[in-house]
Image (cartoon, rainbow, N blue to C red; front, top):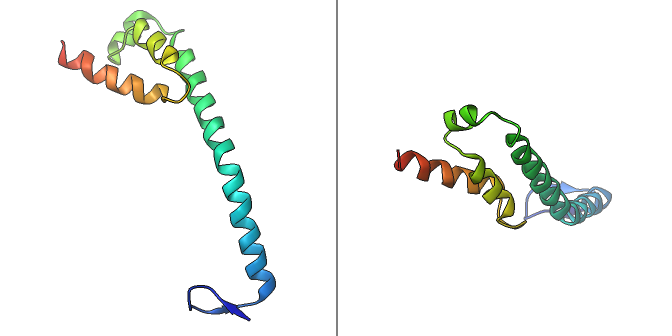
Length: 92
């Protein structure tokens, strides 16, 4: 029997399964982040289909969306749009 952090004893097979699960999770984490980023960009692209009046209601302009999409892959489009919305509200 082995223990984790001095807590309760667990059978070695469960420890090995836990270790394997942690490795798999570590390997999959970047892929999940990429999938999240791609989904975020697709949702941002969908905003381009909205009427300019609707965009104005949520504090954005079409150019804000285009800028967010052109900002690069490493910067999240949602983050970019939230910053732009704040700036647009201050400038009203």
